[in-house]
Length: 231
Image 1 (cartoon, helix red, strand yellow):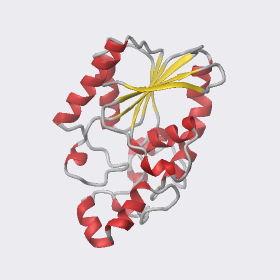
Image 2 (cartoon, one colour; image 1 turned 180 degrees about the horizontal axis):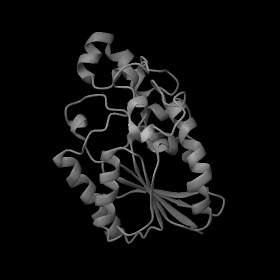
Image 3 (spheres, helix red, strand yellow; image 1 turned 60 degrees about the vertical axis):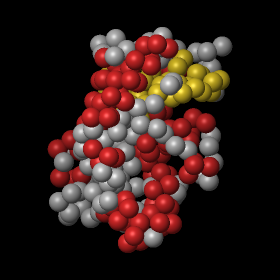
Image 4 (cartoon, one colour; image 1 turned 135 degrees about the vertical axis):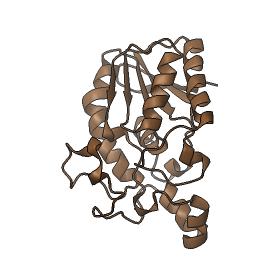
């Protein structure tokens, strides 16, 4: 018996996805194609007849806009919504802003692949004194500066996502509420790892396509009974 549905949507293509740059916590907008992907996600959700009770997203523009487009085009823009830094993309440290191909030339393709995909290897860290550090961003002003990362791997990303899952999202699902989360490739990979019990090794191969809604059906023990991708 299906108790509740969870839909995960990686934000539509961003301007830095398009230019092949490491983005992380840098707040970039959706590209023109990204807007189309987000709108299409909403249309797919409407076609599938999925109705939500609550929505969650990060504090980054590309995810927020993706959520709003998806809700607007599924006629659900009115539902309660909450934004949290805990659903942000993983912080790519000192790699943020760098072109991925040029980084591969500098550090080697294997090393860059490890930084991007491994579970527990940290990227080069960004110092808090750097002007690009998130400690200088007003949206994180209420956080202990020691919490604001200088770089994250997927393991650390999962560790900061999980308290929010346990406190906010899981209780809603257990109450039979349908939830949508529009976030980022790695924060959603972290959630998927937990939800599907994916191994540290296998998580390297999990891809989250931009703008593609992934639907999980849960039973009353929050076991996954079905997983589908809307296309």
